[in-house]
Image (cartoon, rainbow, N blue to C red; front, side, top):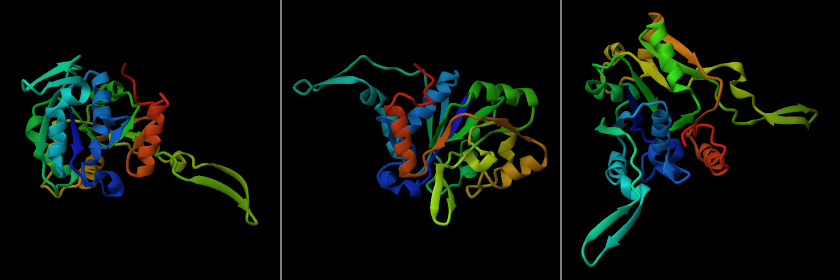
Length: 257
């Protein structure tokens, strides 16, 4: 099975990091968050990726073109113009990088890579800026079992603010805001039939609007519920939170060895 990953947006809310690189290349623990996402899928046996590039897409292309240099020790013999890569760390990945335009919307980007997935039984689809401990294999099995065109992952948004119990100006208690106050949201990990590609009209199509609305109206959209860890990297605060989890050795999304 293939996984399509959106990696072309501007990442304006993380401008401190995205002025010189696309958001999927912002690093967590010294590795781009895109690498973490690929490792998540690879842990579930999915190693064929189609990455939708856009804003500064050349940075992503250069990263994979020089993957061994990023991941291994290297000796440069300057006198003889030679390079030796030590302890090559090969991943079992096939990575197709597609320029889907600087200004395309999410549905438009998927439409531009349609030829890579139109003959598949089903394919995965996600954003290049979020990690989770979702059981991807279980979501695929759920998708195959219900037989509908699309499966989204329903999850709880992380609490962002402290909730205050106040009276007469005094804070009686402080606690982290409960996850989503009970409401589940689209967590961005999809399993899709190629039939959904007919919902994509042009580059301006926003996947989360008309396509998903139409699929839901026709009864073709199902939800795989995930109650575990889920965290997008929308802001610098999010990045620091993910960095802290990784540095502590408690990163919930790291299921690989």
